[in-house]
Length: 370
Ligand code: ADP
Ligand code: GN1
Ligand code: MG
Image 1 (cartoon, rainbow, N blue to C red):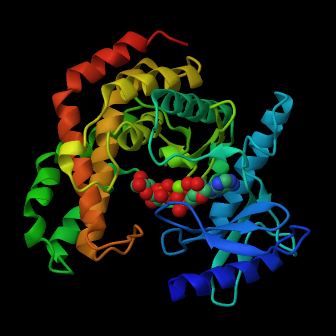
Image 2 (image 1 turned 90 degrees about the vertical axis):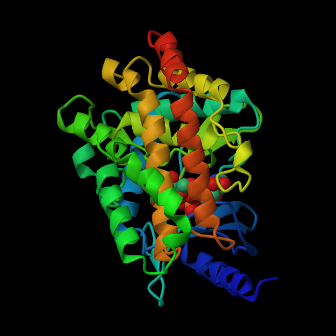
Image 3 (image 1 turned 120 degrees about the vertical axis):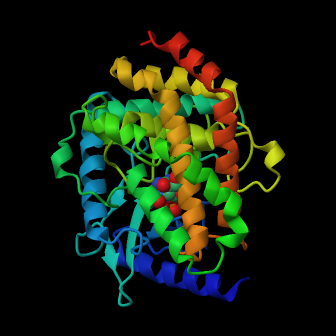
């Protein structure tokens, strides 16, 4: 095994001693396919998730944990009222031995621990339409459950997270600086984002004009950020709460489409395999509107396709920016992985451009569903 990984797993196991789990954990294994944090499956009598938080990306991990504790405690109360299972339907933060939600180690690394959501799967790909539909219902419901959360108490964990216009400026600067001498090789990809600069402004401007409301949103609605119950097939628990902040409903919808309605993996190299599947798109529209229970405004519903296009454009631009900057943000497991990711997003935007009127028609068909 990789020596670095072995060392990290050993450290992770040591760190579990700092948390109130009421037992001595036996093993720690690198786990999951997230791009941001280091995640470990911890096994003892029970199973847990331990994470080393990425504090380069989240400059203030204490604030991230304050948000997560606030949101999960709030959700637990609602789940309890509704007669649900408070241990499975939202994350449970395990406290450290001195009663905190995170552990700061001697090397300045931040760690947190959750109970494992058992008998549930996080999918990297929508294996069938039903899974995707159920994930949409659950993400819509998540947003609704947080609709009366005191938004002003939430910290902005990453500033301007879905400020696409600001993301465009960072991208432009990365192209100009070209710190790794990679711009020449990706001239076509750079041109793609520049030609569509207008896309970076659409949603921000509508929000400024009051045409799209700010809500408490998840902001990272990838299919693998939801646990699907193995028995019922329902979306049981929304995870990865690091970016729960005020945001736009259409972005939550759009980010989910970007990832889950694609016919290929996010880093697929054969672009002929990459398309936006309209059947999956339709199922997500249906599920999301159902989950939001009639609470989305007319404008929000009309802008769902735009949310999908803008989130795909933004994410592609972020991958390309990271490639230009030397792969400093998203984890990579091979060379050029961020470039491959950028290319799939470009392909998806192109495909959405082709299918634009069909995407709008689908949304129109479901707009009156509750
Ligand atoms: P990242 O921010 O790096 O994406 P996540 O919080 O999404 O990290 O965790 C990575 C993966 O670990 C998830 O996709 C999921 O498979 C798994 N995971 C995280 N938390 C839990 C949990 N409480 N129970 C079960 N699996 C979990
Ligand atoms: C990251 O954490 P993860 O892997 O679920 C990223 C998202 C991107 C996504 C692309 C905090 O999500 O914004 O859309 O990768 N999260 C953060 O796959 O930047
Ligand atoms: Mg994740």
